[in-house]
Length: 296
Image (cartoon, rainbow, N blue to C red; front, side, top):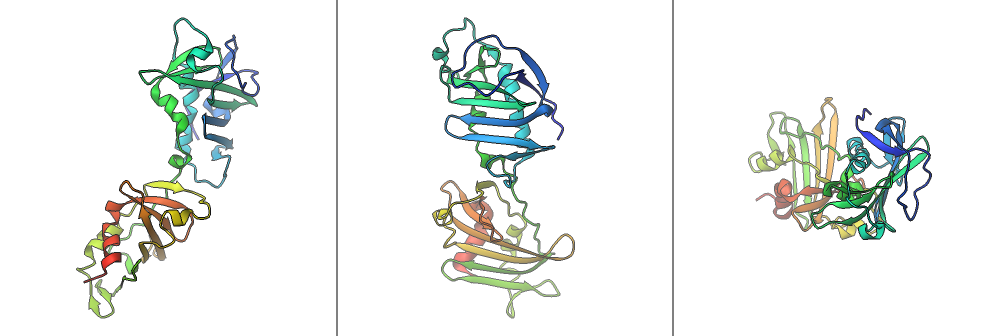
């Protein structure tokens, strides 16, 4: 992975100190490519990343689908903080919330750790930070807030298959109240439910299939009971589609739609996997309507 930013790292520095001191420190500029571990803490949640060869992974779960570009963006954070404007008339660390800070970012290269601590936020949104050279600086608001990034915001989201009327084979949609829509496509391209032609009545649904998209990861490895909290134990809709995939073979998609997120989304799972995702209700309008009402 080619990374072009630079990272300020402390030579000969060991583990991060619990109470940082303002003192002179030797600083070298080390390429980001040399960083092998990154740790961020917002005072409550700590995220740890490690690099194996050219691939970064989340230390807490190496199977998590980590977006490598998201890590690349975080790798630029220490150098951005280190280049922030120094505070004029350096005072006591306690005046900046840096006497015993709980927020920090630590980068590791060649076995050496370099930690930048984040203190109080100013009235204009910037953050006081203490860099390895012992200088208190004023960092940009966005840099300070980057420490609070959720791991789920860094997940690679699954891409759903492109299902159109040209490659659709059959579909079954089941609602919570027992309503069911089912049809298959005959050789002439007509969608039939039994002997009934439902091509026109399912046109909007089929159009919606081609636009289905996951918009967020909600819970990658959910605990017991999480599915019930999200309404996925008694789903509002289960969509099962068979289609011809891009290689000409048989493809299948199962989409389980649970409860509302409360802000315009729905909790969903894909193909029986436990991971909980979000999809927008506007993109599921036909699925939810026909699951509730069936075909008239």
